[in-house]
Length: 142
Image 1 (tube, helix red, strand yellow):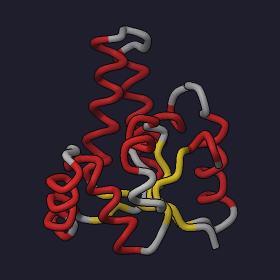
Image 2 (spheres, one colour):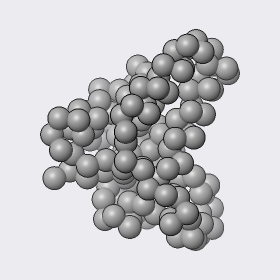
Image 3 (cartoon, one colour):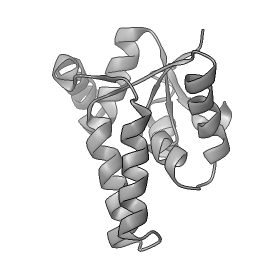
């Protein structure tokens, strides 16, 4: 059984057409139709909302209605989430040790706790921490 922690970069690719959306879609299709297990720290709810806001407000490549509709679609997915407060100590330790923001290390911490792979579309994260944390997988390589 495939089991993955997914980050907001992957989730946004489910909602809006982007490079590698087809790879991301294979994950959500596996979750919906084939019993694949997906999870994210609950920070994903805010991060997806923030990404949609940026696309609407800063990049102006989607309308406010499209952002709202995409966010509603995300919430309707009912993606399982894990409370950040149970991951935060380990995530902070990783952040300090690796000089990396905690919002990314929460995903790493969850993957470590579950023993699952962590799939991200964040190439900089993969390049910086992928060797140290081999559970990090680049979406493009799936």
